[in-house]
Amino acid sequence: MAPPVYGDLGKQARDLFAKNYRKHSSVFRVRFRPHRRSQDITTASTDPYHSYTPFICNVCLTLIDFGLIKLDVKTKTPAGVEFTVNGTSNNDTGRVNASLETKYYFRDWGFTLKEKWNTDNTLATELSVEDQLIKGSKLAFSANFAPQSGKKAGTLKSSLKADHFNANADIDFDYGGALFHGSAVLGLCIEFYVYNKHVGLWLQKNGFETYVRQFRDEHKIDGKCLLTLTEDDLRSPPLHIQVLGDIKRLGIALRALQESNAELVVCLMGRSLIGSLDLNKHSLKSHNNHMNHSNLDYLSNDDFSDEFHVNRSEGQREMKPESWKALIAMLYFFTATWITAIVMVIVHDRVPDMQTYPPLPDIFLDNIPLIPHAFNMCEICGLVLFIIWTVILVFHKHRFILLRRMFSLFGSVFFLRCVTMLITSLSVPGRHLQCKARPYGSWLERVSQAFLIWQGGGMSIQGVRTCGDYMFSGHTVVLTLLNFFITEYTPTSLYLVHTLSWVLNLFGIFFILAAHEHYSIDVFIAFYISTRLFLYYHTLANNQALYQNDRKRTRIWFPLFYFFESGVHDIVPNVFDNPFRSQHWKLNVFLKKLMPKVFDKSKQL
Image (cartoon, rainbow, N blue to C red; front, side, top):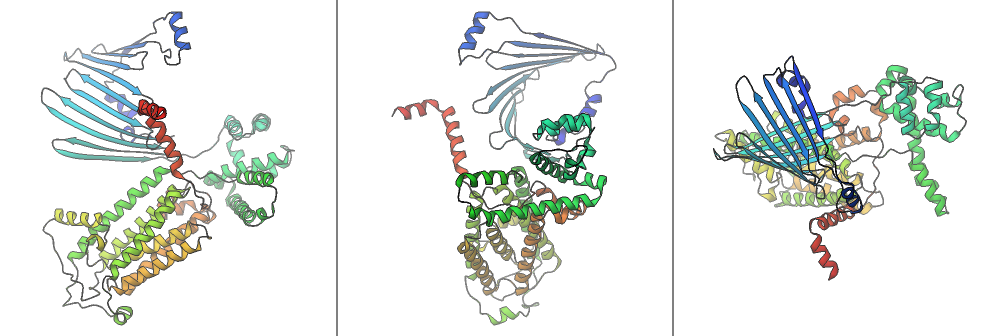
């Protein structure tokens, strides 16, 4: 279940005193459902194009201390149009406020149109789309108009809601300019079955209905007992389950429940049980990998092979895409690159003078002649790697997991680069570089220059020229991480792609040094940091047992990793599919609903 939006946190407590809280109040509610003739009901039930929806009217009259009177009238027509009338009368001041709201649903297209008018003579219109782009997303545009004053205002609202996450971003448009509002709420939910009835629900949910009475009623097993059960407990008295398949399936389900509540199991049983769980999981994964690479080659019967494959995959957890995490990772990456662009402008202002501080001695730069346009060749190598990686992302089945890993790693490395650039300013590595300090008059000019750098991606082929951002090389970071992502998430049989990726990476680094744009230490540090961070991240992601026993430390020192990888429990398999097939089908259905006459004419032709 998704948490509430940021503005609704504590709303119930505030409403207790904010919404005309009085000591004495009376509420009268009336509901009208007019009778309809049986002939109309019979006609509506037999006609598929005219469903029977009765006319319903709800009236609510609230008297608060008899000094404030509220009247709420809600009605819904058979066509699905909702009307809401709200009115308040304050007997102390004599002020009367009222509003009329109309809401219509375009269910076939997913649109909702809402219009509202109040006694202040203000008109409001809102058009919203929900669950059409991404499940849990909502996009709405609202406009307000006051005819008396001529004041106009508009708001573009967007929200994304998922399990344990709720975020919204609004942009207000008026004469004063645009104003951006954004908020995000993260929630943590621990699945824990406390009472006996919850244990029965868990057994029914996992397909063990026959054991509900034995677990819940006969042996009084509650949530704590359930988390401490093992396969030995299932086999031995007093449970003494006789069916071996049920013992194994129950054991797999119990281990999954215990791993999702590892901290509670540690409190109940200590770390010994957690270690055995991780060991069993690792051995099961190794057994499956061994069967994948060896035993399947000896199966000649296709039917038996398919049955074996289905049974083997039952124990593997389904990897949820969690696209909303990829969106958060993308925002993190854009924030890191934007801050990097601002830091690049700052370090350019303080670049050392070439006459006072000549280039530092460098073994590679002192022995390799300058090659013109080599830096452009380096960026072309990076573009080729980026195109290959984009194709892999499009056709990879777990593309959203790959996206959030890519954005989080790139963002973290660029944040680290901001620190190293600010700490020490190295002298210009080559005299051919026309680098001079360019102090700007105001921060507005600096931000404008930073936007040009960010827009061009810091690439010289886009006309971006910067100085002072030497420690460490950002081009080397991009080349190396793209190479590692390509080789990690493609099958080993594509050795030509892996070879091409490594060749482009190494040649790109050579072109950086041949252009004398960076010192050798800049490139070496960039390559080392990028490779170590990639390997450490994927080592933890592929071996959950390494941080399962100490999840608190992982949460503190690696918060991004803990957040992004909380839903991934196995190695991401390199499986590819066609993402356009389902999207093409959805587009055809949408167009047929939007333009049915056009599609009918095309069929006739």
